[in-house]
Length: 315
Image (cartoon, rainbow, N blue to C red):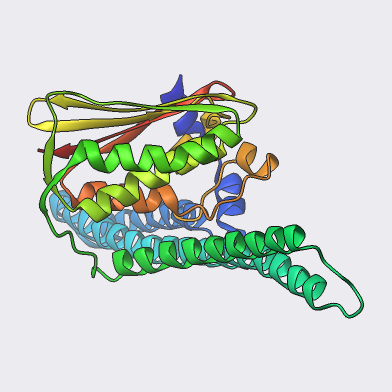
């Protein structure tokens, strides 16, 4: 059933064009159909002309096959070029929308805070001042997180992303992260637990990169789990790999959007509806780090039930 849905989605040319944000005559899928019609017509015309001029039917067939092959290669190159342009156009629009929104909100909050603090004739109690400064700090942290993610993405795109492997304690790294995030989890009435594997103690990998992946996954799990629940962070030895999993009881991922979940700047509709902040870069960064470390990443999700993100790292 899912395979049939994918085929129907690919055949929906107008829908594909709208998603890429381009007109019909700039849409790769539509151009591919047009090129197919042109190739068919040219091939048929070549055969008719060749059959009249050349007596040898095998030579006619060979000429027609060569012409069709050349046209097919040219159409593939043209279609791929337009596909890249359409992707670039869509990503540019998404980048501008997300970054402007993600920066505008914290900057506006900071502006209002400082206007309140500097307003003449207004006396603010010390406790209230501390609350204001905490708000400023949180908004600055949001902007720093976004810029850090953009820097990592920039390195990935420029092939300047490197992994520095060394031995470290996996239990200590994850236990420290879980302890740090428990404050935010408890504030949202979420029970955050870490289930270690006694058979896994040391790992040879880039500890800073693994830390970034686990941070992103725990942060996502907390943000997308609304109204209480439980989040389980697990590690388990599987042969020559360590299997990580972060399971939440959050909003889940809609079926039709699962294929986009690791793309840059993508955010599911239900996440946008719940007004959960995010840049749409976290899972893209996680995927890039895991694959650069020699592992795999995947997920299982049911909308309104929760999501489990899995990834492996070689021991």
